Length: 424
Image (cartoon, rainbow, N blue to C red):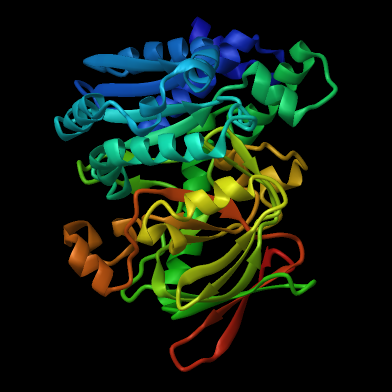
């Protein structure tokens, strides 16, 4: 028996951390990216995620990657900018770098991001400076982001347990214990704690596809979210020619990939002008190092006309003022409350995980691939069908065990989709 076969048959709990990281890296490359022989890979990662990044690099080269280029971020270096940089720095982003990354994607490179930065890194910094940095980064990164939102390339996101993130998820625990607990939660949510993670992901993708096929067959014109306590009563009109998606997707380059690991959602494009009502977040939002808690907004004619939060409200209002599309929705997603992440009872303070614990909406840019034929349309054509355009795309959670969701047909007939957070 080879070493690889021995590791494969060893119970997951008995594997070393190094072996568990290798299994996650294999899923990231083979399932998340579907990386092809001869393809380049552009990866971003926090420095604290270096052990996982190295494993992913190894797996990428084993899969035939031509070259892996990694850009590392460092939390103390980010804070140094806010503490010591001149004021002009906060309106600047290296367009030359983002243009190079976009060119890499156009030349055939895949994209992988490792999440794991401190969710509260910028919580004590000037919200105005944080907002300016985010706007500058969004503008500079737009060419690359458009290729991602149009699914022109194969891409994925995975997570690594890092000390500052772990302390937020497991407060009061010793650092080493908190990191160990977070790693185990990531492994479980990412479906690698099984004998054959690649096969498990294929089966999971098939289950999501059945749900997506059902939703596409229904051709609902809107969704109605209503919570038991009345804090959410929201009607989300769906874009004309909308298309539901979930699980894996075939990118424009012909490669099948799983954009998020983990993923539990079925999602589509709302109509930017047909959202009305009130909605309250069911989980906090960690956005660019700031924690925004208890978001509550009111929509009229598709646009947020009132927004509050008990923490981070200034950042929230600056976020939705990024551009005209930032006050409108670019995504709506259905996630059952009995998803593995929700059942874990863990608040991850990280959208990659928390969005897969609850139904959610996203402010900003729509996915053109969630419009029938949208990948071949220009911005004007997409807008005519209701797809939103913005520099941002920010998901936040609205689902819970007390949320009901109805599908509304074109004739106004309501059909139950979810009751108390579970699929009917």
